[in-house]
Length: 177
Image (spheres, rainbow, N blue to C red):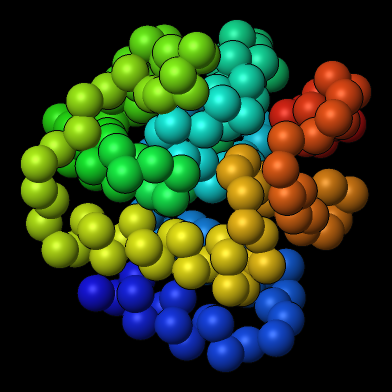
């Protein structure tokens, strides 16, 4: 409920300062992966059925511990009818990080479908949180596709809409260098 109100009030803003955006993301619904005491944190809006999110996960997952990167994955459920139930299943899991990893390690590239089974129903608070993430991504950030990545870079907050088209750009996002 609070997340929905937050996203609705932010939708009225035309621009957000980097600090306000970062604070808003910190209060959103997300799943964390990576070390508990990271050197760097980034936020990624993802859909459980997104092949580009999966490609980003494959690169990031293999280096997160080594580079001290914590990723806060903000679920949205838009690509397929199964997206919202899968996002809710991840969030509702006893261990959301493990559930997210299961979704990604069992991703079916041929059908562009995440591996976790969706839930039949989810508490309204979870559904509202996932919908609030979509509003934050689409209305406030102006992004319509996943992944949308928000990260610090040389003292400012950058929004990357979509998967970067080069390994160098992905590396810069993950490391901050």
